[in-house]
View (cartoon, rainbow, N blue to C red):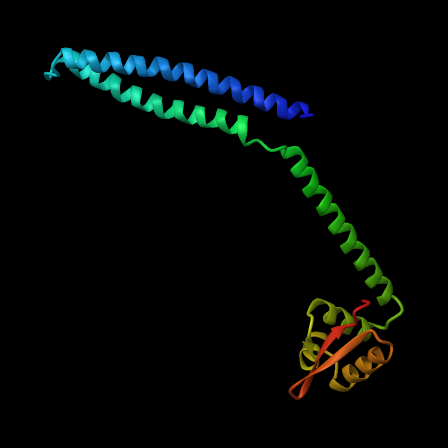
Length: 178
């Protein structure tokens, strides 16, 4: 059974279509009579002929506006989706994504608590840039090469990270469970 909002837009669509068809019939009758009047005047450059031509120009603009109203009514009648459900689905997805991301961030914060400052710096840098090289870690954390190697070896033993060889250095990734 259609919802109330959908029924209202369909009624509005019918109303707009009906009005635009009625106005269209009136406009085309008026334009026909203006055209006939112009033919009867043989369109000599008289004041009456100019009035007829200007009214024809205005009536053409009115037909354009009438076409827009007709198209709007047609859209409301046939192509209306339930925007409310689309928006609600988007909002639900956004909330679910944010809740999941927040949960991951909370887990990561808990993981950082027992670590010292240098270990925190390294782990945060690894999380921010997947596949960061050890040489880049050195610049981002402002720690010595030996300290970074030591901390990474400890993290690797605890299965917190994994390293992948890249030339003379290593790329560092968080382990899958982090």
